[in-house]
Image 1 (cartoon, rainbow, N blue to C red):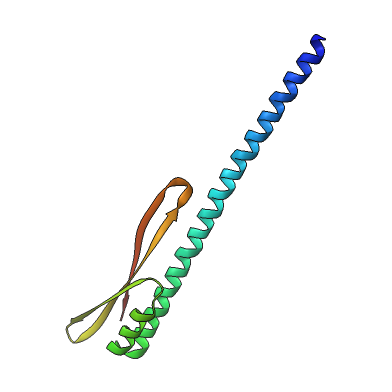
Image 2: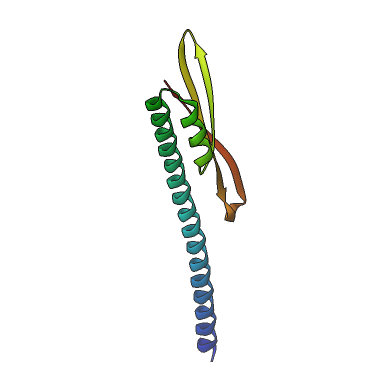
Length: 116
């Protein structure tokens, strides 16, 4: 009888450890998926900023093109024109939100670049 009681206790302990392991692995999997998604989003923002810089440079810093980019932007896009020594530069800043719901993280980041 004692052997049977010990066996049931060991089986319950193994079952609890198994379910705890599954829960922990699931949590880490969700966090890893969030981190990958955030990295992909950051790469998309960088790519979008580079395309905006190319469009501004190719248009010769035309205000109509800049206004069109700002109105069609899926991100927070701001363009500041800088005129110095007869040359025109445009500071292109793209902002986006960085969110990890499981960790309650909600940050705002922006990437800046110059169109020459």
